[in-house]
Image 1 (cartoon, rainbow, N blue to C red):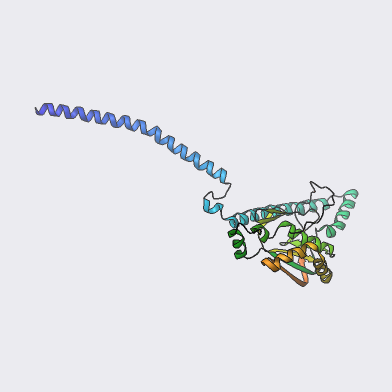
Image 2 (image 1 turned 120 degrees about the vertical axis):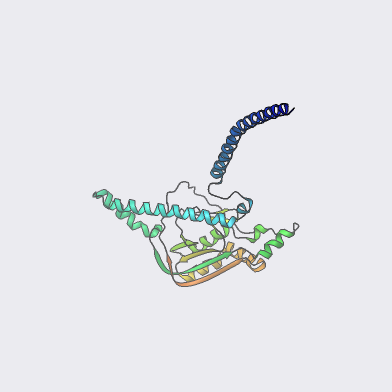
Length: 272
């Protein structure tokens, strides 16, 4: 009896060991496949995120995204400026009469084109969105004709101030500290304004060098600026002017290539 039991026990142990070997052989490739799949998933996520966090909390953090994109654009602009200076330095080293003549013409146009630093008396206009409570109130009442879109600064508001300052004899101008030149465009992207590829959030500061009185008079005479001021009075949009005895503007150091241009006589837009 004991021999039979020993034989049965030995047989069961052999079957158990055989089952473990087979089970181990099946799980090993499965485990490897799972690790490979997980690695591929991590790589795909990293590529799609392009350096941004894909979690919902980060997606909604628009300020973080704006700051990140602005820093990236600033790095690219600094690189462009460095390359432009290098090209200019190499061009001046070329001993050729025609090249020297062209370089002299370029140097003569640098100031009026905005490629030289300038300073002088001027005026700064600051535009800001309405207070959050006003925007929340507009969101809360769907029957109200006033919308949150009416309570924020738009590109046409900035452009109207810019146009009025140019009309007032501005000699040079900056928006958010960036030099404005003939190819400068102001664009709205969401609730930010993009200038030279860099996104900015309010407040928006537009500064101009020139005769302060003439600049202020031109702002006062602008139909669009006066329409904007009605929203300032009723809904507390921000509008402030500040005269300065000396403003200092940097030279424009970005790309100045004109890609698209079309002449036209579009009527001036006025905020409803």
